[in-house]
Length: 386
Image (cartoon, rainbow, N blue to C red; front, top):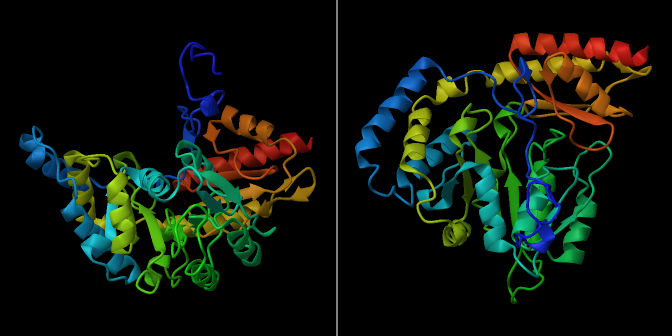
C-alpha cells in the first residue's frame, strides 16, 4: 500500500498497492508528453467563452440542463461538418472528457461476470476502467507493426464472448489508424456473437475511441459514418486534442439511441456543469479557429517522423511507428529508455515513457518546441553513443 494511505483505511483489496493514473506534470520549458494541442485559443475565442459564462453566471444557483441538449446539438452539427455524419440529438452524449464517457461505457455494459476486450498495446486507462467496474479485461495482441490483427481479434471475440470490444483510431500510444474494412468485419462478427453472462439475443458493443481522429490524413473516414448501419457501434470523441480544449474537459459519444440511453442510466445527476456547457458552446462558435493548427501539426508530425528516422541509437536507426495522430512513438530498441527520458528532462524537454519496451512517445508542439526537442534528443543520442 502507498505510504500516504494508512493501513487502517478499508481500501478495496483489489486497489491496495495501486497508484493513481497520470503522466508526470512538471514545470519544464518544453512539455511534449500528454498529446495536447500546443496552441492556445485565440483572444476572440476567450472573449466568447467569457461572455457565455457571464451570461449564465446569474443562474448558477440552479442545476444545469442535465440532458445538455444545446451542447448535444452542437456535437451533431460538428460531426456533420467534420465527418459528414447526420445524427440526431438522441444519438449523442457528452461528459467530462472522453475518460468519463469510457467509464460510463464500462458502468453500463461491463461489471462482474462481464468481459471487455482490447487490442494491445493501447491506452493504459482501459484496464483501469475495467478494474473500477469489476469488469474482466482481456487483450488480443496487435501485429508487430501495431496494426490490428483482425483474425486474432475475431478469434478472441469468439472465445471470450465479451460485452465490450474496444478499438482505437488512431491508437494510443502507437498512433496507428484503424482500417475501416477491419472494423466492418469485427462489427459483423459482433452483431451475432453472444455475450458471456448476458441473456439470449444480447450482443457485444463495439466502441471506437477516436480521441485523435481530427489528425488523420485527409480523406480518411470516421467510424461514425457506420453508425447508421450498425446499432452496436459507439464512437467516442473529445474536444481535448485537436480542438485545443483539454482544460475544459469535454468528451462525447456518437451511437444509436439505445446505446446513449444506456449511458444515461449510469450518468451522475447533472454531471456536466453549466459553466462547462457554456464554454463548450462558445468554442464551437469558433470551430475554424480551434482547428486552425491541425494541418500544421499534421505536417509537423510528418517532418518529425522523417527526422527521427535519420537518428541512431547505439548504431541502429530509430524506428518510428506509423501515426495518424499528433504524436509519434519512436525508438524500438531503447535498452535504457528511462535514461533517455532523464537526459531529455535535464535539458528541459518532457516526453513520455509509454508503450512496449524500447519505445517512447513525443507529441507535436510548436515549431520552437520541436526544434528544442530535436536539438536535445540529438545531443542525448550522442551521449549514449559515446
